[in-house]
Image 1: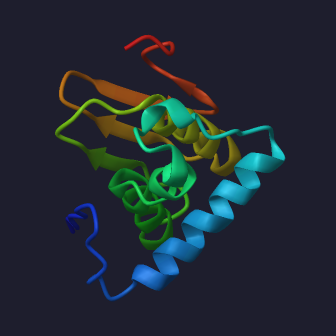
Image 2: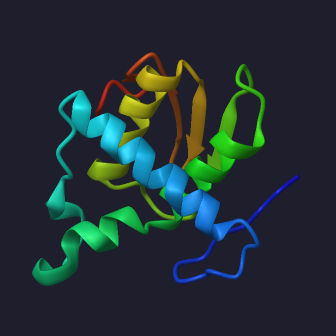
Length: 122
């Protein structure tokens, strides 16, 4: 099953549950030292809110909610992933023990146990 999320798209029937899962994930990440990388967005006044609502983070939350605990989560993106998203994926793979594969416009990133196959160089 493929679900597509677009920025600002809140029509998904589970959007409230997805956003709640994302908020809980971000709180758990803060508990292990996560600090949002605010250089990933342009606007100073709403940086944290913009980072939280990135479509790829919503896709991650949906993947965690809708797949079995042992399955790999796969996310495809047509742009390069930002530093903050990369940090989040490393942290979530560590917290959940899940494999996460992200395809951006240039490569595949394989996240597992807090590390990425690109060795944080992309």
